[in-house]
Length: 174
Image (tube, rainbow, N blue to C red; front, top):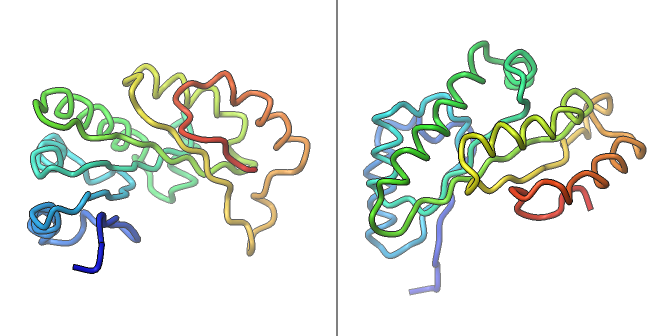
């Protein structure tokens, strides 16, 4: 009635909520575009299938390195990289089977000093998983930890390279 067209579930890990699938389904049944963000670690084959079948419009997965040890350290969870990559593969697999509107798979990468040199590798990894993945680079929110923030030189180097990465959804760090 008030013009709400879409809803985005994020903050913490939305897949921890025990009733997330009925909630997503209810939002979809109201005619809303349903989007969600996940770290990917809880997305199994079954979870990916359910997300696609529920009619989620898009899912954003966080991937911060092409190197398992760096991603796991930045995410604070050992084994997160392997689970996240598997989640992307499952989402692609079940999304490809979808006859109706295909789920949009997005990957968010928070760029910081610890991973700025991994961007080409991340792009290649995502391209290998599926060339239809949308990729977004986000600057680190380093208000409290200035050691993670990119300096001007690294930002400039990154900006020179991004035109070579077709998966990028829009221009970051501007």
